[in-house]
Amino acid sequence: MNETRKKILIIDDEPFFLKLLGDAFSERGFTVLTANDGREGVRTFLEQSPDAVLSDLVMPRMGGVSTCMEISRLAGDSSPVIAMLTSMFKEEPHEHEPPEMGARVHIPKSMAPQDIVILVEQLLKRDARQPD
Image (tube, rainbow, N blue to C red; front, side):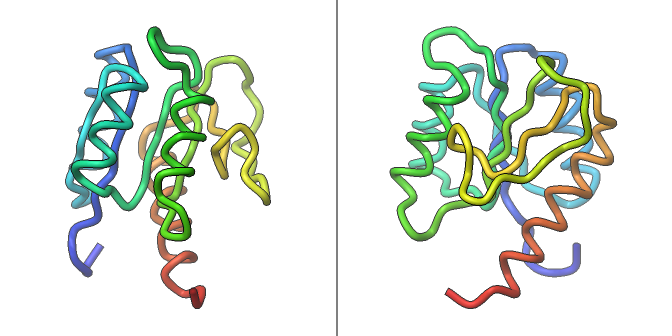
């Protein structure tokens, strides 16, 4: 990524996934922000305004659906790319227009971290090309 460093917020209660995904995004030039649950994720979103958000579906205190919907509501018209990570299905990632459960894309946790990075990069590039 040659343009300014993009910020990604990864929200997951599993330290293993935070590290695995954080390292993959960092290696591609992203500034990586992390949160351990939905409440912390919403707070970090408000403080840091990331370009993209990856949220686990099942978390304590505030689940992924509520987290994504709240971030989307707070962002208004300048909503970041929001994706939901889940181990509940194994299919290919799929996009929803309009967003479903607060997320535009649902991604299986079994997907390779590098592929998740490429998918997010593609979504960010597509958003940058679309007029407001």
